[in-house]
Image (cartoon, helix red, strand yellow):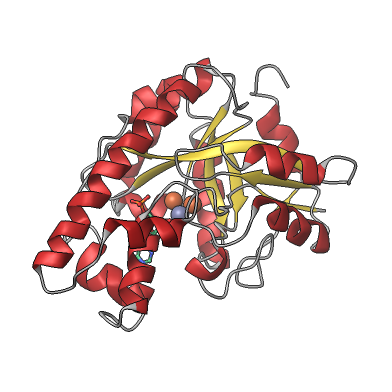
Length: 282
Ligand code: AMP
Ligand code: ZN
Ligand code: FE
Ligand code: FE
C-alpha cells in the first residue's frame, strides 16, 4: 500500500481542485494523501470532505519556504490542522509577502519589455495562493517564453533578472512553529539546499534536528533509486524519518502523477504511521 505526502492543488500553484486530487489518489489506490499547498490550507476542507467515507486518509498540511540563502529550503508540514494556531496564524502574513513580491516581479517583467498586469496573474491563479508558476504560465501564454522551464531559467529562478525574494520564516522558527502547532515538519526535496559536502549536510541536519525536524523527504519523484536510498540512509543516520511524495502540481509540472510521480514512485504506508507518532492531537 502506498501514500503521497506532498501535493499541490489550485489553492496554491497546482492545476487541480483539491477534490480532484482525492479522486486521483483513490484511483491510484493510495491509503493517504497529504495536501501541502504553499503557505495555505485553503484546499483542506474540500479535500477532506471528498476523502470522508473512502479508504483514503487526507492529511492536512502546507509547504513553507524557509530563509536560506544558499538554495531553496522548503518544509513540508504534515498534520497541521486548519484553524487558529501558532503556525496557522502566520500563513496569512506569508500570503501578504507573496502579493508584494508578485507585484515587484510583474513590474520588472513589464519594464523588461514583457508587459503583464497583476490581474492576469490573479486570473491564472484563481482564488489560490499566487506563485511564480502562475507568472510563468502567463509569460508562456503571452508568447514571452516557450515554456514554464524557460520562464524560470531566464527570468524567475533564483538569481535571475526577475527574481524577487519574499519574507520567510527562518528554519528554526518554521520548525518550532510547526511543532508548537502539533504538526510534523519534514525537510522537502533536500537536493535544493545545494549542499554537496557530507560534513556540511551533517551540520545542517544536526541543526534542523535540534530545532525539532522530524522527517526528510527521501522518496521524491525526480530522484533516482540510489538517491532515494541515499537520502533514506542519511535520514536514519541523523534520527530523521524518511518521508516521500510526488510534489504533484498538475499541469504546472508536466509528466507527474499523484502517488506514482514519474511512474516509479512508491512511498510505503508505514511512513505515515511512523511520522504520525510525532503529531499531537491526531
Ligand atoms: P513561489 O512559491 O512563488 O516562490 O514559487 C515556487 C514554485 O516554483 C515551486 O512550486 C516550484 O516547483 C516552482 N519552481 C521553482 N523553481 C523552478 C524551476 N526552475 N522550474 C520550474 N518550476 C520551478
Ligand atoms: Zn508549488
Ligand atoms: Fe517545494
Ligand atoms: Fe511542493
